[in-house]
Length: 320
Image 1 (tube, rainbow, N blue to C red):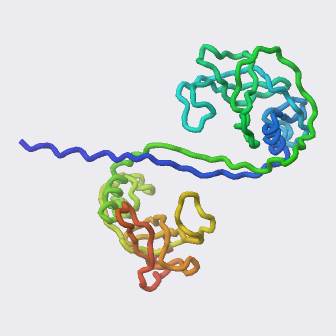
Image 2: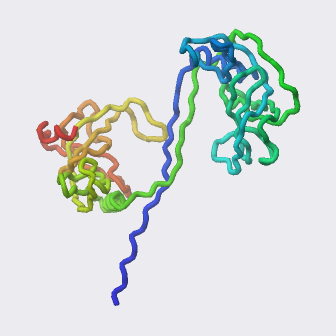
Image 3: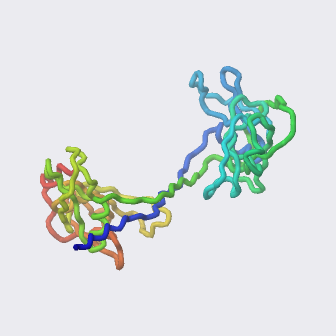
């Protein structure tokens, strides 16, 4: 009796996509965020007289620019809510809380934030709440630490406001981050395992005969499954490229540097990689390159020139 071959190990890896999103603020958003720093909540009046909080820069009904700022109350009413039993990293509170929409006194729309209560039985639509301000404020929505229960009667608290503050906030940086666990399928697992042996493999479509690297398990053109592995490269040709002049956070590469699409020999799809070993302003289309592996690396660190003559444009024009 022959023993069955062990099932291949399923590859899994935690991945993080993170970048800072930077934006400038117009006069309305600048006034709103600067106001939060000063414990003042501002809204804006629309053409129909409705007070919008958070304020918007253009009227929802007419699309006209609006700047009629008003101050509203720091107390309000919960319009709807959802319980969060397990807060995630960087959420406003570390203990379980309720996501709430709060219509502040004097406002006609609701503001999304969190409510600090001991459990879901302590929150309900229609309950009265007030803002709990953060001890340190910098001009951001997080200047509102959270809402907390507050026994009060609704009040029509609306007064005109110039929107002018000393040292106004004119821009914000918002960190965007996505944490997830990635598990490649059969095709990409074979590709990753081959890289561990410093080989690059693709898969050939049985219909059009194109070789895709990295493999996808199916031909994107013909829509048929691919399972024939084909080793390609290691050398290739630069098809297109860009010069990077902004240094990325946590990336130890001095700018400027070049990222390029490289068509490996035998492949019908160009892959993305950094070019090194040559001044950035000497990288060009048609440049012949080869991989450079770092000690213990599971993929090429970068590609460098081979010293061969440049490839003729007709040999790679279909891969642009």
